[in-house]
Length: 601
Image 1 (cartoon, rainbow, N blue to C red):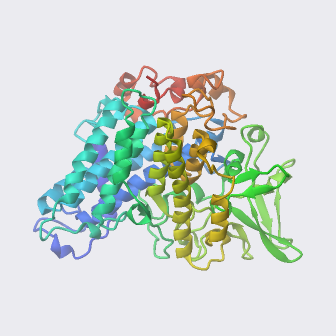
Image 2: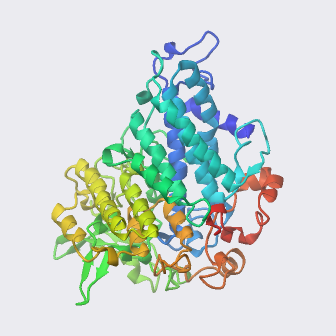
Image 3: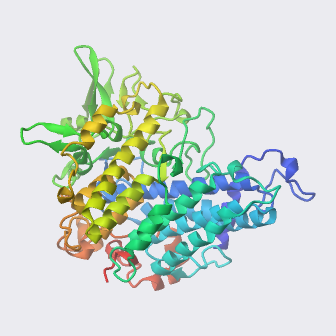
């Protein structure tokens, strides 16, 4: 993809160069930088940013598939058949473009030159990082599309051939192995320190090595349907070398910076804010589903409800008034599975009236839709204040607190110790070690609470109640309650995956996991229904049901959303190789065709 490579190099122009005399050559013009003059410390942050944006967008859009989010009715600011139609499972090629663009155009095209520059300097740690990010990006593409250009993707080929998903998987695993020795090498004396360019792990090679093993554990566990390839002991071994705690996890910390006035060259979004804010919370069209909000509620036999302490942090709230006093209402979830709300003019857009301090909608018959709170936040670039990233009305009323993962300064949890514990719980449960699985499961839940509170405490005192820490007493009470499994006999695969789904909210991995267990079909192993209550949206469009997802029942493989169709760039410019990559590559039902690891053997 030579054309893509040259497009990507244009992004370097936006990079800030410090002390240009240090790298300036006689025939190099610093005002028109090329791959030869772009420094390691200026190139790597852009590669990390664009991979992060690709992964963030993939996770956000997967949320429409796995029942986390929906879109309000009548969004006119979005392209036809994009977000506005994903809730109907009426998919179009456009929904898969952004991850593709940010990976190939923003990140992948710069890896070769990064490695070349690092080799010249003896900056070995940058070479290790390049191999890791290369593996992460191509694995994302393989999980997204099934088959895609890989071995010829970044060379001089205008129409690169496609590789199979398994070939890409094996290549990505090999890249992880290639990366490890570079992190153990001592860089040359004058080489650029990794710390100078690393926006993920601040140059800590220990974290990078833990990330490598965490990726191995995640990807090897995704092979659970492949009896000949699924190797539990290898997964457990990788977990032991993966992140152990908050300090060894890979967490990208974002900021809501008043000086962040520049824009992403591909998306037009601010550069320092969280990827999920840019994707999911920049505007006000996204709502949570009832399937997702129900995960935080535990109905009791006496009619009361116990709430997960994470509920007010993970779900948006808005401010209401009663007798002159304000209080916050947690959003209700939009029931897209059991109701036809999407086909009945809902959920409708709400407005806030400062004079009456009340909410209303203009759509007749949808007055009750004021219970659905938007995810919207506001960053400095939109005119918001650095310490007030929530969505406010003109009178200061908080119209949305946002959520833990979707505010401008929210963290991105790329690889964490709690994910390792969830994977360990699953593996041990499969092996029949329910006692060990229980311990890992409880460690994982506690770990997620700890990770959240670490960030919430770092915010300090906040006007936004969604950014205040959870009381430890509430956490301890919840962890000791019957809301979660307390004995090995109570533990089920459904419970493990429910808690993992919460902790991994807005991640691509939640869709991967759902595919591995056939969503709510209940026909994988003897685990029963692993995602109870989940189904396709009731308002699924007839064309989607009959053509894109033609399965008649949950047990039919093609009843479910299994992959993305390739975006228009491949359809328009690489059609021959696309058609040869999969017999159904250009058929309407390609969306319901399993990727390679999703096919049982």
